[in-house]
Image 1 (cartoon, rainbow, N blue to C red):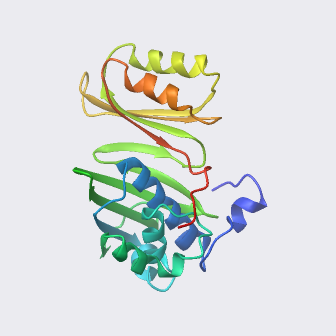
Image 2 (image 1 turned 135 degrees about the vertical axis):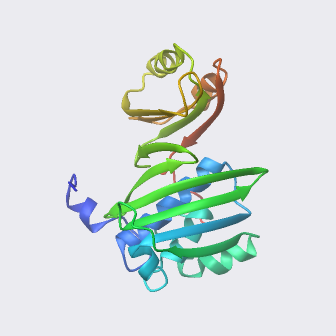
Length: 227
């Protein structure tokens, strides 16, 4: 694992004892919430390896709850996030799993809310940094550190060219793009990390493209109101 600078090792401003087990977990929860598109009503959280062994002592459970509430890593309420989640009508279940998954700090969040069900799998890779590695049946990888688009779409010839054309017209560089699909000409999921903020009009234009069924925008660089 390589870090860009000393701040990537120390971690972000945070409430909690561990950048990996607390700050990273907040970010996993917050990305999961953004992907669902609303506050979840019920979440089953499966914890693996180190997360499974130490999630109570290191505050991983409260950190995930805080992220699902939409809070930042330095929110003062993080120690009381489980209570706040319950008061907000969120039902959380934590299930330690013995499976030997590739990364020691892994959580899989099975969320229900707004008439939707969504599975998001994330890993905390150090210094508060994360990698989202799964969305439902799709294998993905993105950090949440940059403005990100997540598109569900048909595997249509030319669709990604249309997406990149719209991004270019908005004067946005693509930092990273990855695509997974269920089968040739079947359902696909594309993740695009960009170098700048994603305008609302751009997101709407991409959502109107033929074959696109859903677009989610993730931007953890935006501070949420502290409530």
